[in-house]
Structure formats: structure tokens, C-alpha cells
Amino acid sequence: MSTPPRNIEIEERHVEKKSDSSLVASTFIKYAAYIIIIFGVLYFLVHYVFPKF
Image (cartoon, rainbow, N blue to C red; front, side, top):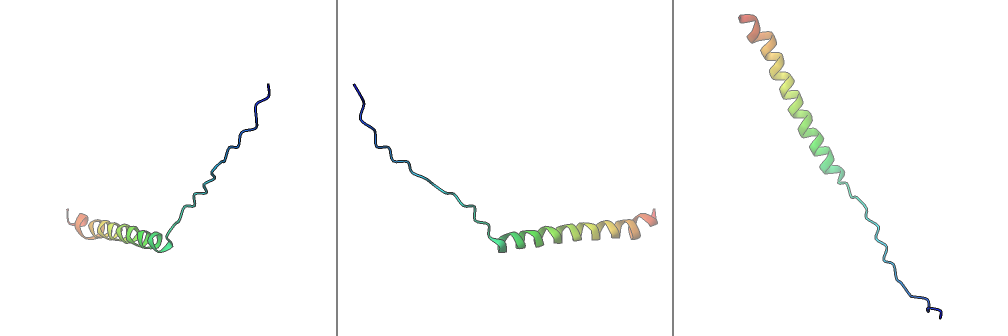
């Protein structure tokens, strides 16, 4: 008793990650601005506020 060969169709899916470079750039600029503002506030505190105590 031999079994007939089965016809199995295999579906292949290729998933590509799409990275939007403009979105990445705008996010980088946003967080870079946050960091610059934080360092500016710290600089102000250290040089102008703390010496008065």
C-alpha cells in the first residue's frame, strides 16, 4: 500500500520593515532639542542661581 504524493502548497511571505527616514530624522531633531534645552537649564542653574546661595 503506497500513499499517493500529496500536493502541499506552501505560501511564502516576505515581511519588509519600512523605515520612514523623514520620521526618524524629525524624531532625532525633537529629542536633540530636548537635550539642548535641558543642558541650557542646567547651565543657567549652575552659573546664575547656585552662586547666589
